[in-house]
Amino acid sequence: VAEAKKAAAAASSLDQVRAAMQAFAHCDLKRGARHLVFADGTAGAPVMIVGEAPGREEDRVGKPFVGRAGQLLDRMLAAIDLDRAQNVYITNVLPWRPPQNRDPRPDEIAMMQPFLERHVALSKPKVLVVMGNISAQAVLNKRGITRLRGQWDQALNLPVLPMLHPAYLLRQPHAKRQAWADLLELRAFLEGT
Ligand code: URA
Image (tube, helix red, strand yellow):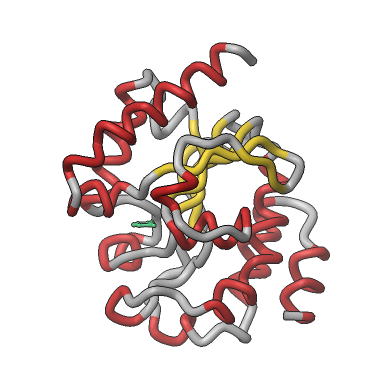
């Protein structure tokens, strides 16, 4: 993790963060992945969304949230008039797909955390949306997204809104009601800024 901290701290632009991640050899996930998945949307947008890790489609294309969960995310954002390409910036805790989409391990999360923090600092969003357990764990150091969701928190000098992950919503459609409440929270925050 010391190497990750050093490499992340040395990056002074988003391109440099991406390059530093690309060159970083101390995360085993890199070996099994096809592409580094860095970010999508507009850097500098007020909303920065942090997901978990690339899945199969994301690994193939090299962009976050382009598979089924990503399509649901796009619809969720559109429901509060946010355009994925213009109004948000999207990244993940891990830039490489874990084998067979297994959960990332705590040591893998910890290893890549300095890059995530530098990524956030250089993107200067007004609010962070953390989607799912892994993201809440990495950003807030808290567990239990079903309890955390919809409750404003604070991390990295930013307001943080934890939400249910769209992949979870695909499996548990009844939870969409809660996701809608959280989206309205986000919209109210943006209207107030
Ligand atoms: N799920 C995530 O958390 N991130 C992606 O990029 C795709 C699916």
